[in-house]
Image (cartoon, rainbow, N blue to C red; front, top):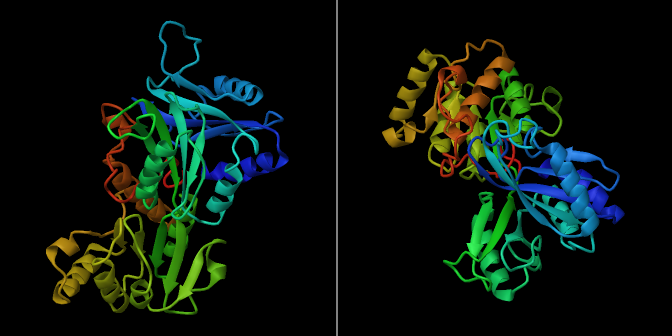
Length: 384
């Protein structure tokens, strides 16, 4: 959804209604998770995807109908073996979509939400999907303010509290309430989609491997910072546009930087004078993933130095070293893929084994809800 917002903001500014379809629930081997979105503009232009191509044709028609009627619809698509040409998910899963019209007259908060996401401000959009409350009604929730209504003050208050509670980690999903916001009732279904600021990827060591890791981190939606104490290496020209480059001692920079349970830290310096003080700091602070590059010999030496520096077994158990999955990688770009693969596997509870050798569902439930790596919500990697 985050990637669609520039296009949607342009349509919104033009004032003509457009149709927005959002995945609000999935079952089985669904190809896209909650928060994935597809929109159809006033001129028929399509952005985004909700199923990777299985049901997009039907959703296109639904979105145009909804934009014309001004009334939201909740639709579920699954697999049908009765008609080979039926519209459905060939993977055998099931997705439920909320398709709603959006325009300044129908959703006065949408422009504010788009501006907030573009500015990196955390915001959650709550939308009624089922029940006696108006379907498609939205409430935008920021840490300090709200905009819009779901139709009842009590419901607004309960949803606001829940939205703020999950905003920091980008929690996205359906919650159930009574018609006036009562807990432990399920008369009203509300989809909460959180747009937390992108998680951070901190890369220490401005070498060619760092440039490759920075590129793939940016591709996956992280806000990337590269730090090195050597000015000759830490230059913006050596890294992708949009990557922050800092000249500082790594441990000193990290000590003055906020991290949280979504932060990824990659150490590619493999030099003890940088690595040891940096990892002492990293392994004692919040982070989803801490990886360090180097050979097994380098790892053994580094671990011995960290033990000597006073780190406990519990703290050392957080260290992924040597970094990455065993892909046989050689080039910096291949190594970056192996690092990204390990991060993704940890996030979603993957094994790293070839799918041809595995059995069962390919798209497993979110096994990493508590891993710290899941920030989103809904999109590839971390982008709602």
